[in-house]
Image 1 (tube, rainbow, N blue to C red):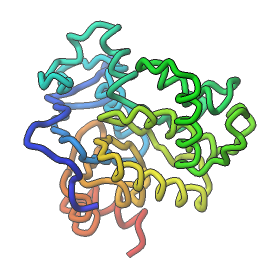
Image 2: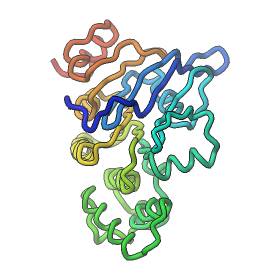
Image 3: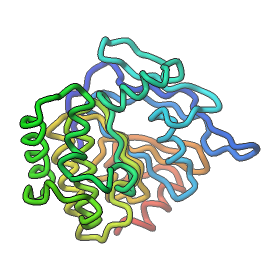
Image 4: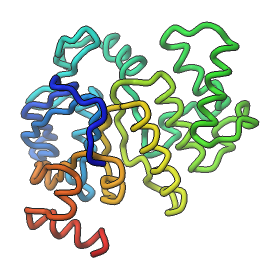
Length: 264
């Protein structure tokens, strides 16, 4: 992805000097960057590189040991997430943010119907017309390639790929401004991954969403992101436009990562 869809000169999310330590263990060290509206950033690195810890701090699920994360609210004011109350953070997840987990069971209510999973997000932002909610849920099931005839089936009866597509529908139905994705294709077989990636790329482009994607799969980063940030031992060691970093990496670690995962 080359062009940033809907980018503006005002950043949507700003990370400044983020760090997280657990005793003597530094899981994340001095990470700073900005994310613009419509931009997709991939955070890549091996297991233990700190990328998931960073994503949790960026999404206000984990307080940083140092530094801060600021988010531009709908009124245009850049707010420090640490200064928001619990109710304000919950409101952001209902209205402005989505979060796609690697394990769909973490992002879905497995015992209720697919339609209810999508409809609940609409109700959380104030929708109260049952007919309209069900019609919109049906439309979104179609958009994520799930047979509408299965709208009343619970996700526990779905395949892994269907569950992940349903989780995407649940997160995107309210058209959030920012979506966090944690290894969104992890655990799926190759053919299912390819189908899911095509779907995610199409929806992100169509809706003009900003997104932060954590992945160890550089093919996912190449297909989805405008920019890549490479992490090692809690630090960002290289960042830049996706094609530049993956085609001509500067740092030896990135070169090793690319050569060991991507074909020549």
